[in-house]
Picture 1 (tube, rainbow, N blue to C red):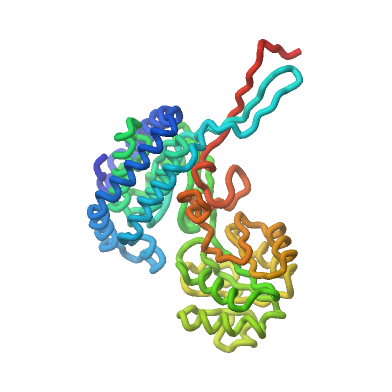
Picture 2 (picture 1 turned 120 degrees about the vertical axis):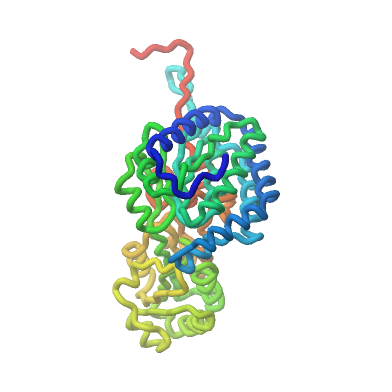
Length: 425
């Protein structure tokens, strides 16, 4: 598959319908592919990605050179280094070696009338992925869809057009080498934004849309899609320091949760401390964060305890900064922390630092989030860190899948009922 023109608006609707039709045909073939063939395809794609590392870096440099108006966080997501390319290749190999999630018997039982019923996992079909400036999503999303027997239509942002094109070519080469249809992974004919609208209006060709990007993109998809959507909104994540938390551990975990990569959706945006822990825990945490260049904003109690912290506005508690900025608030114990998180959180990832097991259990049970961490950084909210090889996103809804969406979460199921001639009275 050649890398198409960046902007070719000639008869986009017809071209998108063709992409969708070819994806549907490929999905039917892929759904019946054996696990060994899918493993071989992904392994070959990883090898091709390594072989074409220099091509990919040149394409990525073209994208970086052409980038205009991107925030520091988005520019960081766009850039590919040798380590990130190797990470993509290793991720493909990890996904290749995962158990095949298709045709697994999820449950089975017998009925008194002799019917034998089994619930069996099956591919969803054709999945459309809409994402922004991270070219590695092309590898992650494409490979996870393929592992689960789904065809994928990958609409990355124009910022990563050249980078994603090379990655896509590697995936298609892997499929062809394994005797599987290359059209199981495609992208729209151009980076024109109209293609997003066509994808959202193609339920005859696309079974599921997965948007991965900023709030504006997610909201547009949720408001306009005629295709079912699996999405997350913002990652307004909290780390709550319970009064019983170890001080040194709190300093280290908060630093990592905020500053390891501030621009990812798993970064902590708000720090909550028990009021009883302000005198013991706040200063060492602030010492560490300010030394690292983090901007701090806080409520009245926090500002009164440490003058280095600027007053927070009402909007700060509901802001996903994706930058080295942190809002800090004091709470009157576990109940108040849970109430604050459930009011201001976005259902993504929440963490408690505590040595009190009862508090940890209540936090995990009562906080409304896809992921609850106990004594660990929120930046572990990642499919790779969960042993899934990679993820297609963090789902914050309550239906179908929640949390990291890996290959297993990209399947549905059907019932196989076996009888011996039974008729219903």
